[in-house]
Amino acid sequence: MSHFIGAVPSIAGLSGGQKGKLLLLHIVIESPQLLILDEPTRNFSPTSQPQVRQLFENYPGALLTVLHDVNYLRQVCQKIYRLDAHGLEEVEI
Picture: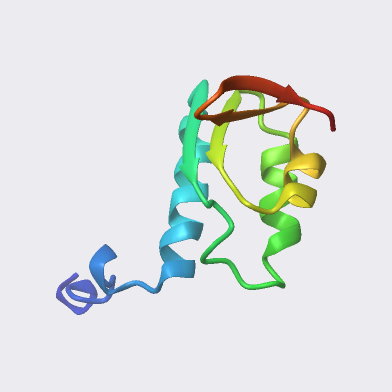
């Protein structure tokens, strides 16, 4: 067993994309009812985007996210709300 020591890198040593994939694995395993994510697609390569989008499209819980890509939001969300200094309003999809 000693040959496995040090074989798994620490999370701190992972790239942004690798950390994102680890987070997605955690989401799939734990399936929390609410996800709160800040720019969830930021660290994923363009080739990973379809899989990330599919995960969010099929997610059974609620997703609260900050994301500036309106087209991506429209593909993933059933309802979109905008919060600004004037309050909260639903945005047409």
